Image 1 (cartoon, rainbow, N blue to C red):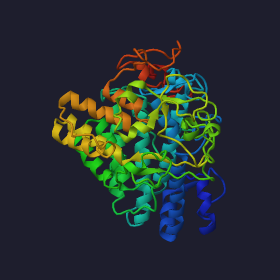
Image 2 (tube, helix red, strand yellow):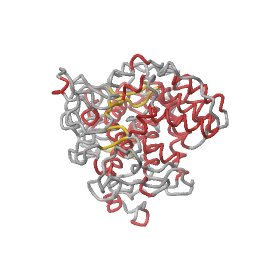
Image 3 (tube, helix red, strand yellow):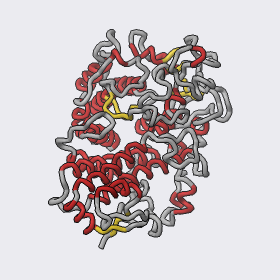
Length: 509
């Protein structure tokens, strides 16, 4: 008889179902048969429990200290990981050595030692997987006769969340364009005893890809007909967006285009809102995000506290969020090559620029970020997926498939809404691909794709060049060739020490 460990969240339904089904002991073990009985006798109670699991997992994607880093201010959910991926790319600069994310800019944070950022990334995604598995274990084994439509929706959302977590892990902990037989990451059996049972070893990249595709596709199929209450909730379009990301990674370009088109249909391009600071989930370009308010804000341990360039004192604006950048001058700035590549007629040129008089402790030559700013005083929303990304996926997939005309048209459909002077590209082949990549780097700057795209495109890190604005510090002023092992994160040392299925021989370089 398979057993299911029901954790504390189940206590939330104690008032609505019999004590026969629930006790206050956190180690309470409930059988599959009991869950089936609950589904038949009190489906509302089971739905309440499953929904609370689902909501809790999604909330963890924007919550402080989810990875259990001990209170570090670079541990606040998905956006903390997104910034990690960008600070290691060519296009973002850590302009003032020290403070959070500095070790990643120096490429130290990828190493296995305890306390480094690889621990935060690993623990965060496996915490998300754990939450998704709780829901999947709770209701995934129910007979179709008692699995209601609403329970199916909850189950499907949890599969999408688990799929996206594995999608991120495989990109971070394996090199770009790996062989399918290469070592991937552990896949956690949701029914396993995580306390007393054996650990889980690294499966192959193919195994992980299969799990990602299965989770995302089953989640997508199961969300057919679901109408979400708001953009904080995963629906079929969001599942399609992650499928598009996965198929672009795995080079199944036909499917990447198919699912990006589906995701794209859920939003619309809105050039008139590109300069609003990327702080409002109501923006029609946003497909999925987190709605931050006074109850959910993590204050200084937050994305905008790390990215807000404006100084509250210099700008003298009520509501401008202070933080490590605006208040202390620890700015994440823009590489001069990317800045120079943005046309002056492009509205996105306003995202980046020299000190405009509102920067605290400005540094000569630095190009500051004005794309992200928060005038809500720590209540700016988080974006996880935007419609513009889907245009770029389609353009790249079409170009990769040899459809230059289709790729150029898709790129035009996006860029012409940003730049009225932009004309349909006449480039072809590798030149067209470079143009698509450039606009992807401009459009998605600061949204978490920098390092992952570099790995996928087999691009090296170049900080030492004529006219560079990267700080001339021996600890960070270096180049790294394409394909280098330093682009791949090491498995945390604590995982190797505690997991008997992963040994030092399994470690990345």
